[in-house]
Length: 191
Image (cartoon, rainbow, N blue to C red; front, top):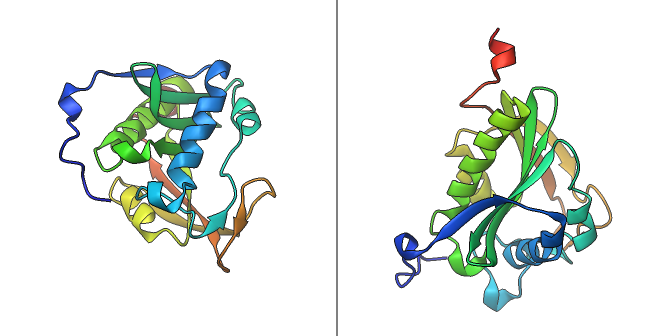
């Protein structure tokens, strides 16, 4: 998707915040619009040509609200325009569900949200290693993360990992694992 020349990032008043359960339905809608939109509404992150069905549901988003799990939001006024999930673990954190409103893609919001997720993982979960997953059939998305320091671990699993994340339209899709060292390793591990 080409950059929208009429879209001025500096003119926007964007607010970063932590999601609450009341945001779950809007988060699920945003994620599904970003990853499984109708063809006329597809941004560059879509996978609708690879997988049919919703990417997530309100119930699945609600299940992410627990200790060691946070969803960060970027709001434009009252509207959620980007989100990312950060799950803490033992000296590592998993980053997923990075989504941007398709109309606002290719404007740097995804990079900004990834940066905030990485900083949050380091500060709140003492993560020294950051992990994520990408579909093997998404070389442009894999390249996006590799440009930001993530490397393939060699681990791959067949898609779908569960029955409620859509059904593959094409065969041979795998879920690839990536990781990178945190730019701000936990203080505990340095002692």
